Length: 224
Image (cartoon, rainbow, N blue to C red; front, side):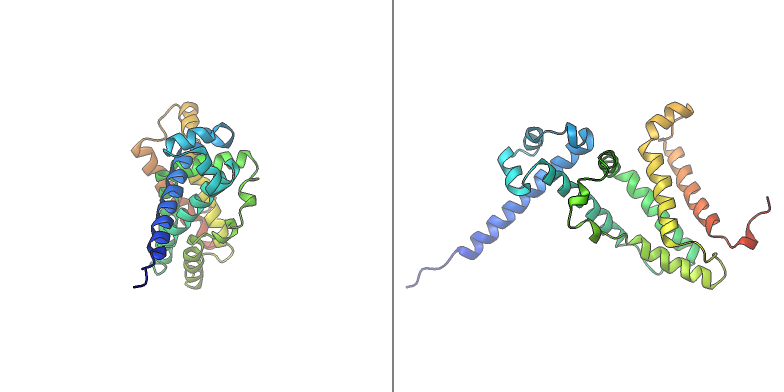
């Protein structure tokens, strides 16, 4: 009687275990890189936090830099995945713009590690993410919602046609990213809690109102 091959199940089990190990390392590395930055993070600290070994990090990621790039790629992937779930048929157009603005603000607010990692990578002038072959694939899905909403709004005379989806996307990103990334120093400088629930809700409403005003046709703007 021929011996039954077990290569399939073994390969499947091993692949699942390998993927689980890789993801555990990635989660631990995300926490440590977000807290200590690329320069301050140590491979042995990451392996300890992931209950793994240094050699496993080098096996799966090649180097500390390779792991850091993988962490950044995963952050972009998660953001892109969340954006892809935005509805594209929101009516009226100004509400669709508000949906995109609120999404970006709340994603930044709920994922401080994303801001911390981007801050650190910008300190390094983006030299690590520039080595990623996948970075350009993570195009913002919210841009599709904004393009559609802006086109519909302009066609109905609700929006001016000179503002691009890119402009609005960058406006919202700047207002949210700066506020949350600098909330501690802003609180000290302004002498008030900028991270209280009331302050955060106020800034979200301010972002949405600012975006809507930026889209108004010239003849509807208040006189100066």
